[in-house]
Length: 430
Image (cartoon, rainbow, N blue to C red; front, side, top):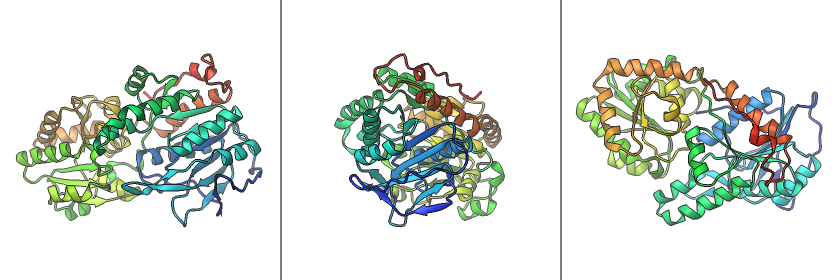
């Protein structure tokens, strides 16, 4: 999950405000890049979540392929500084902490500042990653300047609402998301299943751009018996692992139910949760023997993955679920529901186990079965690792590049159904 931020050659301490922003029209060193793209996101490393880490991978990949990039994002804290390097520049905007997630920021509107920036240094295409106030500002600015814009659908906000007592907002949120994305030339989604789901809800111009996984970072070779011993697990004791936000929308009731079922079959089983979130105290109180390892990054995170045996992923609100691919690359046997990344990557009984969508009883039974069958567990993990090897980030970045290049040559009018980007063919990895 963890990805290093772009290498910073120098830093500038300017924040972009709605009415005041320093515009530096400097020429980057080296030859003119083949594409000049503005990327707008309300989350980016060192924030740890699937969106921030995935977009960082895309940014690094596009830079490696010789493209000029402007990254527009909220300032994360007082020490945050905008990075500038050859072919790369960050623009920091104002942001506010997200309720219950104070480490994450919601970008504030910045339409006029973006208009000034893009008037002086016009991008070929604007790539909008998130649909918050900053993303909406970027869409409006691109519209006014007639710059082609594309978007990502990365978070099921409309599905989250029911987990926070505001289920009545689900339809208005969905209507906003549909309006937002249908104003862009195309909306990128990570799986064919999500494309079909959103198409049925009235989303247009959908294109599948899959996700990759770092099989060098996430590897069975990082397994640590010392780390396992710190969890109270011996060499043959099954460790059930979960990585992600500890929050209501992650369906943690099913996680605890699966762990209880596994313990009934194998009392030596241990449960480890990597991550943090608003439900941490509740989970610790309900399951005192669970190990809550907190936030982990880089090689430390990779060691936590590889030191588990079974990866439990009970979430029902994912657009993809990068952690599924990371667990597979780490050689874990995955138990998940049959949708999102799991449906795209797992062949039931060959390289993981799938329960019917929302079938918590089946999910728990599969977890209990695995801890009692160590040979099957090992075989599934080995095949999972093999599957992950076919999803290299280089090939995935090339998919995004196809969409951005097509959009840069398309008419920006949102009603132009015949634009080139709508006919762009994106090939998923084998």
